Image 1 (tube, rainbow, N blue to C red):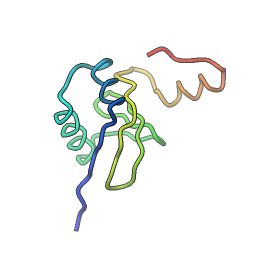
Image 2: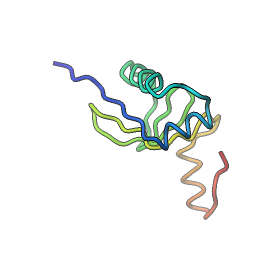
Image 3: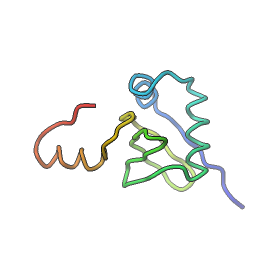
Image 4: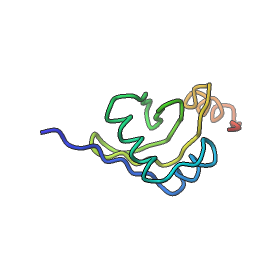
Length: 94
């Protein structure tokens, strides 16, 4: 028996997505993310998640994923950039 993936989006992640990527209805965003993740159309690196060119921070397990914040679309590797910024006591501008 395969369990259904449950994707939840925090208010902060939703607001950041609308601000950095574009407006989308909350249910539509949740359905889009569930479909993409369940279909394997993502890249996960530690707590970072890349879906359709959009970087997220997430937590969860095999059946539940909570999207905590959205970094938006980026042509650079957000996890590496954040690690560099921490190492150099610097910040990245999104």
